[in-house]
Amino acid sequence: MQDLSGQVRKTEAHSFAHGGLADIWKGELKKPSGDFEEVAVKVVRASWRDPGYIERLKHKLVREGQVWNELEHPNVTPFYGISFDTDRPGFPCLICPFYPNGDLSKYIQNHPDVSKMDMIVQIAAGLEYLHSLPHAVIHGDIKASNILVNDQQQATLTDFGLSRMLETSGFTTKTVGGTCRWMAYELLAPCEDDDDDEEFTPPLTTESDVWAFGMTVLEILTGQIPFSHIKNDATVILNVMKKILPSKPGNIEPGIWRLLEHCWDFKPEQRPSMNTITAVLNVIRSKPLLPEEIDEFLSALHSKLGAMDTQVANMQDNIRPMEGNRSSTDGKSSRTLWGRVSATFSRHPSAAFKQQRTSEKRNTLTSKQEVEKRLLLEAT
Image (cartoon, rainbow, N blue to C red; front, top):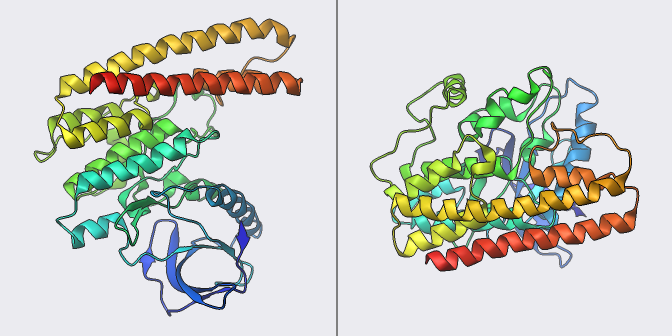
């Protein structure tokens, strides 16, 4: 990741966009050739009252920026680096390309004839890429305002992990204005397993991203934010906690709506993966599917992958005697089978054994993806 300090300056007196987490300014990046490129300068909105806050934020920005810097996909906004002197001295700013088309919400308003389905498929493809990396990248704040439209009229994801960066004293994902409308049930509702742990914060997961993706699709197709009929965010949270979901608008095809309902399953493990969602959307784009066809396919896929989960569980049981005495897996940090397998093996003292386990797990995950692809081909 590049330190762009001394190479970026703001070019306007006022920011041109305001998000829940940051203000965005137009700027110029001086390239090694001497040429200048117009860029977006994202200045995280933070409080200066806590002397240690800025220092902690710096470390988080650098860590998350390193992850973002490794990403390369047509539907992922490139990340240029961090500048520490573009705004206030010593304060980190994120530097990205400037896209005149703006975010997807505004772009659709200005281009009503754009294919919304194409944009949705592109978003799904970008998110599928993030989730399929060897170390899955969780976006954590998917919504139309965090999706930019580049110069090729492609939807690109941005603001990876920004909500996680700001999970420090008094400024968490749950307090970011409006984001609760896209947040998954398990992030808003009390967790039954953690009633005695008041400080436990549910982790962001690929499954919570899937929920937010479903809400973003609803936002794109209707042109309105989720739960648009409810003005108060607190009421939205109460509705989700009571398992009250948005009502079906008349302009959404039944098959797409059924897919969204699966994205909003209150049991995270029952939600389809982005790999499955992307493939189903590509099918729907060419030929509409009935709700029962969506159900039939997802049910078949779930059964196949459930059988593979059993195989992994058996593998875990066979390996456990080799580990000797060890503490039990913490259920709070590892809620899914895949998380328990990872936690179990990561504590083993043998590096060679851990490498072997990693290889076996990757092969198993690859097999799961192959099952998804094969079932999709059979369905189409």
